[in-house]
View 1 (cartoon, rainbow, N blue to C red):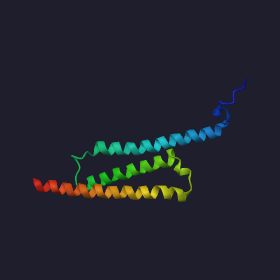
View 2 (cartoon, helix red, strand yellow):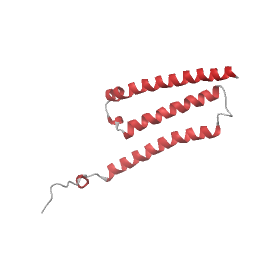
View 3 (cartoon, rainbow, N blue to C red):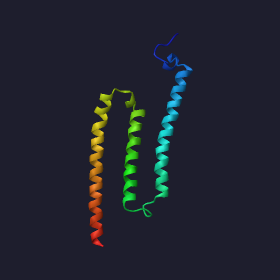
View 4 (tube, rainbow, N blue to C red):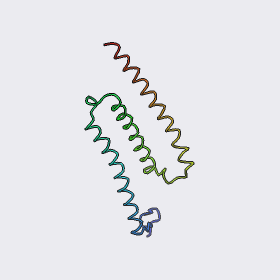
Length: 124
């Protein structure tokens, strides 16, 4: 008796070797891009520790970390959540509110950190 309640979808997938190569190439490219950004963050963190760097250089490093983290987050959303395959209007409709919210949070974090830092400096 043939059961009709079990459906094996993988048997119906007919992919060519060419499509498989494209998928594997895309996986390796995503891995390389995310690894390269992470490697840059780690190398900068190792060679420029906070106690050795101050002033403008530390501000540049700090903002670079924020930018690289946002780039990685956006790339992950575009690739793993398949937002990169959508139309431009839908991408903007989803990403722009998050970008505005993240910029708002960064503004609050940086302003409050400067305020608290100034308060600590006056106590000594």
